[in-house]
Amino acid sequence: MAIQREYLSPNEIGEYLGISPFTIRRYIKLGELKAVKLLGSFRVHKNDLQAFLKAHEVNPAEEHLETEEDAAVAVVPHPSPLPTPPPAVSGVPQIPMPQNSPRRPRGRPRKNPLPM
Image (cartoon, rainbow, N blue to C red; front, side, top):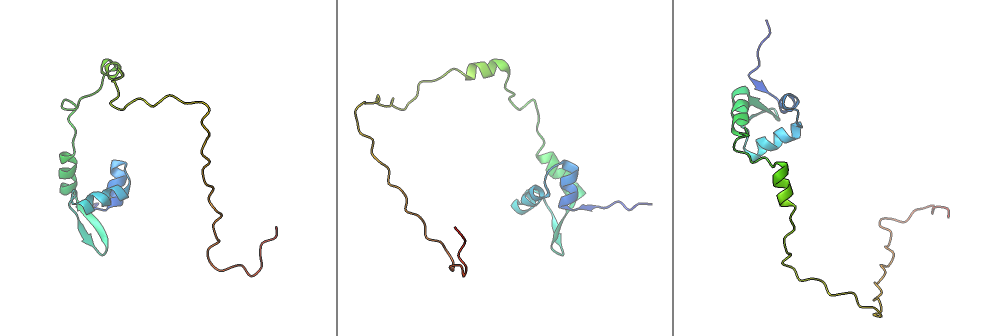
């Protein structure tokens, strides 16, 4: 007879949910997922995992799903509150940008310099 485990590791939860174990640990550290720490590793009770999933459940009726008609309406451009840029003036000299000087090498110099 197999023993049913009550506590799961972040790796097991991540594999079960199809997400990274680092994401599970992040939820634990943020306090969103209740866990215990045993010998330096986290363990999550099955009931706490179910409560977490229930709290993050999405109801499609409450979500506004964008339809193609909504997307077509959203494409209409609105006037920009920013002023238009001035037109390009010909005959104005370009200002040269300063060139960065070469950086000094960091650390100790080599005993045998590289061949050039």
